[in-house]
Image (cartoon, rainbow, N blue to C red; front, side, top):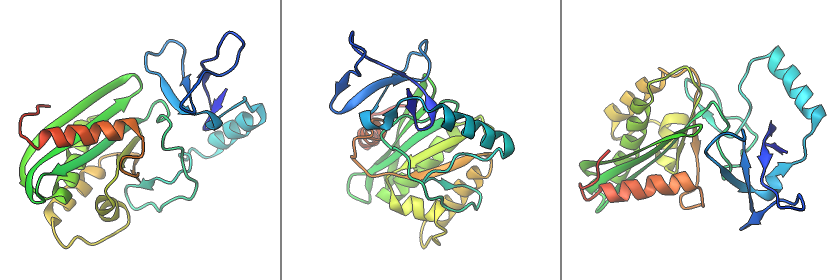
Length: 225
């Protein structure tokens, strides 16, 4: 089958019908990979050979990344075509989900990060002392970027903070936390292909929910990386 323009394997029953649960189906990019993905059933289509050939020709002629609603680090503009945010990140791309929490705002604060690359994943949960929620959100992004040591692989960083998205992708001028924002932008410059995506909080995106849980747990100061 096809998912977001890429070939995938779809879990079917004995009658070759998709196995659907909660309006989602199970897919894999490779049969031998451990990690499985659940995506909306309408997002999976029959293989379109003509589209694949057209995509191959386009990629061969101009090695540009596929368009999406992601904001590109390094001064590139926002693109127009939306992605299926509930679906998996394509292979060979590092996905980073970040969140921050503050009990009191300001108050005891923590950060949560979920990093994923193919079947590999890492969680970070860290107490950062007394801070505002905005600082915690920024610190989560900074921690995620510092934890990614390979800068040549494309990175997609997801945040549900409009504050962070505006500062790091829309050109907002910081009125507070200037040094922290500058430090993050410096880290962003290291990556060949880093894009930041604004997503909705508590919108059913599993790794974002995990990052939120890790951040809230870390506010107590008992969580460890």
